[in-house]
Image (cartoon, rainbow, N blue to C red; front, side, top):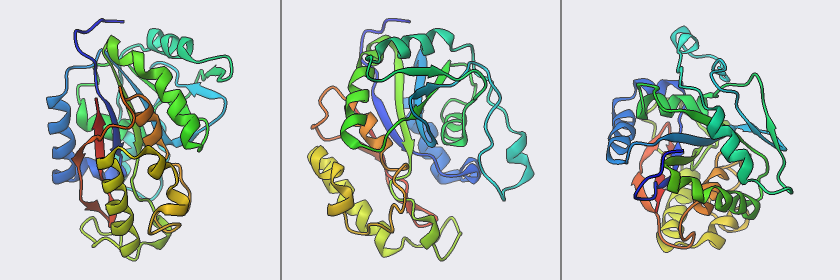
Length: 260
C-alpha cells in the first residue's frame, strides 16, 4: 500500500437509490466533498445492502450487483470497472482477528450502496475498491471492527460506511425526491445530529431505546449501523464528527459525516 504523510479520514455517507445519480443537488454535494479529500490509494466500503457473516470481501473486478427493482432500465446497464483490488482485500483480511474470520467471495461485485455514491465521488473508477459485508448489527462489535481498520487510513485507504441516517421506506407517503420529511425522520435526524456533535457514541448506540422516531426511522437497522464502523475507524471515536451533508431526500435524512 502507498504510505501517506497524513491520515485519510473515514466517512459515513447516505447512498440513496440509483436516481441519486441524476439528482443535481445531492450528487454535487458528494462530488464536491470527494474533491476536498486527499486522493485515496484505495477504498474500503461497507454497505447496508450486504449483510453476511462471517465477514466477506468482494472479488476484484466482479460484475456490479443490481440489487434494486422498479427503476429505469439505464441503471441496470451502468458499469463501474475499478482496478484490481486483490492486494487491498488481502490487507483487510490480515487486520481481522481470529474471532472475525474472513471469507473471500469469488463472484460478488459492488452493490448499489457502494457503486452509486462512488460513481459520483470518483467517476473515473480508477481507484481499487473492496466492499466488506456487514457481519453484525451490534454497534459495539462494529466499533471494534472499525478500530481494526483504522491503520488502513495511514496507508491512503478511504474507509466508508454507507447507509442512510433514516430509512423508513414502508412509512413514506410520497416517493418524490422533494417530499417533506415525516416527523419520525426529522426528529431522528435532529437527535442524531446532536449526539454526533457531542461525540456521544453511547447515545448513538442506544438508538433503539433513546431515539425519537423509532421504529419508523429504522424498521430494520442495517442502514444506520454502518455508522459505527466509521466511528470505530476514527482516531478518537468520542470526538465530534464533521457533518458534511445534511437535509432530506424523499423525506429521508441524507446526513453524512467525516471523522478525523
